Image (cartoon, rainbow, N blue to C red; front, side, top):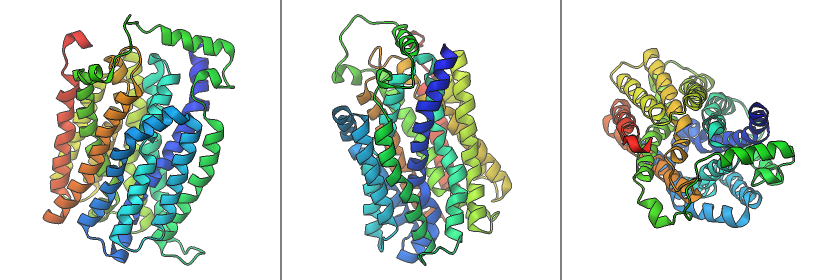
Length: 420
């Protein structure tokens, strides 16, 4: 029955979530491929580009909790529909920006629209996947992020290199074409998704009963649901927040600056080749997500499966900072991607494993942890822009970000024996 239910969850829930995550991620990072040409056309400095990237995450941070409230009030259908319409509007706007301030505003709108997506999907999966399946379910959804770079990189590079029929500047045409699927998916997602297994037509009564039984296998605490004050006093909540901040700071900075870094490595001589080579670290990230999530589910261990890969990623990144530009640097960055993916794939199983909030992790706790990761999206690209502009190379920025990934290991993996 477990195999049957997992197969159905993977096909009817995880794959659709992964599809939305895929377009969500391309929307978020396509600016990195347009960065050089766009900056030249509208007069952006490296620092202004970094600020524009960070503007997305500033809005993401500010609007994440309001999104959670709207999800609770509206339900998954209306919430997804409105959010995705705004994603599309931002993409259409990006195709027509003329100044740094419009760039900031369009990215802010995208951040406002996407702010609740990650915690919303994390919460939705937690309502469907029992603990024994949760890490692989999260990894299955999250793998769409690096895959969006693996496939989206060449796609963006191709769109930037073709003669488009609208006679638009290449980077504007890229934003326009990528925004169109969001409009169609807004209607499809609103019609398809439901809030809980009890409303799913693709589960049989026996499968719903099995899922309910699996959720009830969790040890119960005979106490009322903890309030906000009690949850925020849990040290594990803040350890999770700090870990996600450290991991995502390195992850986001790598994702947004990777195409420009590949240009400096001088191993790609076309937009398509740059997009393809930039996808290699993201392919490593995808492999790390899938392999480590499954291994963690088999062993039932979460903390070391998050901390060790993060440290490996940081050390590989640190080595890359001291090498001359070339293929060895790209290989080390691919190993970095693998480690980051391995850590991300297991991380979201930790809050329930350490019982933040009791039997089920409250969506507010998920949102708070996610907000710290979002703060990493503000800090990482902004800090990278300053360091690159000040030093003239990526070496110093890579070294600083690498140290953050290494620090994540003791923060999450060293724990009292009583809370395993």
